[in-house]
Length: 174
Image (cartoon, rainbow, N blue to C red; front, side, top):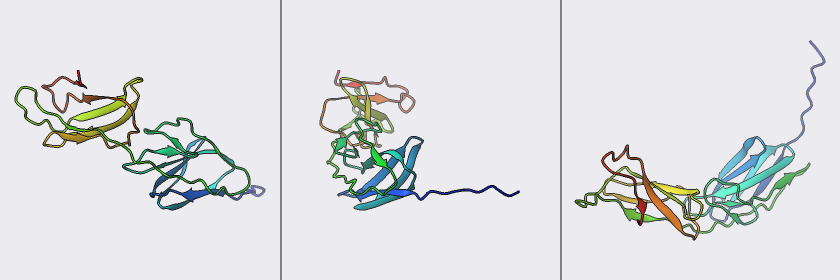
């Protein structure tokens, strides 16, 4: 069978720097269009023309969408678009801010014994939006470290009575 011709269009790239290094994700209408890790320079190529959101993240920092839009968690927040229209886009740069974490220890209220393998979840105090979580170690200590926490007021609660079936979940500090 003949006449099945295909025309390809050249892809373009988005590039820039992440001052501290880290993971960069380019997200298009269909989801993640490309990633790059390491740094400080990155280049994500073979992208068709279109509108994209670009996010940089690194453990211990507050994730950021391009154009200085800090946003902990996996949210779009106020992400600005990067538009590819027939040419490469350069200068999509990031400087990630150090993030906070919540640290502490979970113990049995009756005898002070540590409680291990218990999940804790940090949410925005005013909205209940998930921001980060952590897991207690054998000595009961924990750190919320899955996503960096920006300054703010948080509600911290234990979850997972399956890990500690004899205990009721608790919201700190009530």
